Length: 277
Ligand SMILES: *[C@@H]1O[C@H](CO)[C@@H](O)[C@H](O)[C@H]1NC(C)=O
Ligand SMILES: *[C@@H]1O[C@H](CO)[C@@H](O)[C@H](O)[C@H]1NC(C)=O
Image (cartoon, protein in one colour):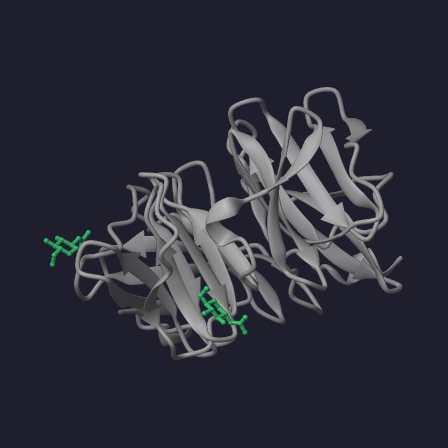
């Protein structure tokens, strides 16, 4: 099984300040806590905050098989029964995980390990996002829908727009990226405000407080909708997917590793394990 390639690397975190990361702080440094080694970055990451476990998919013989990683122990477990979990989202209110791919959408309940298929067939799912209901981007047209009352509805605010990834922020504003840039849409508005045409954004996630993060080839950024600025948080190359653990620590994946960033107050001799902004 290729999953064996996911070698768990143990790092010591004794010196770590585990307070909530203050992303806007100047000269903040982060300890790189490697959760697992991977050979291919997943498209999406999701965290179940009750159990503090990270869900992602691993390419096993061309299939995106969902894997659960216990963030505290770093133990890995395969979730059986889903062949194509390209997209993943977490519903932390009802304690559920959603998996999406070429076989539609599946809902997984970690508490009793049950899996249910939603009444969504003949759809290829590219992206999932949970906010009261499960939202999805359909491949290849990249249009956004919501699954509500057992039916599929178009998200009117994003109608006829190609959306590669999107999230909601704390106030219910929608932020999305497509090949033209990063856009914001106010609640009840249909106006798509361009925040940044460049760089090309590869990943997107909202944290536990509803702050919006994007990643590019070279860095991770946080969006401030008040002044419409996109501010660099850390310089990390090639981040494709992000999520936040139960203490709101940023977790990211690049092509090689799943990493958690832990804010530290002191700097170390070992420059390799630290990122500073
Ligand atoms: C991206 O979205 C913007 C805003 O809706 C739209 O103007 C643009 O055409 C989209 N880009 C593509 C390639 O569809
Ligand atoms: C966002 O921008 C506004 C206006 O410049 C500023 O007052 C506010 O502190 C910023 N928010 C954060 C979290 O940096």
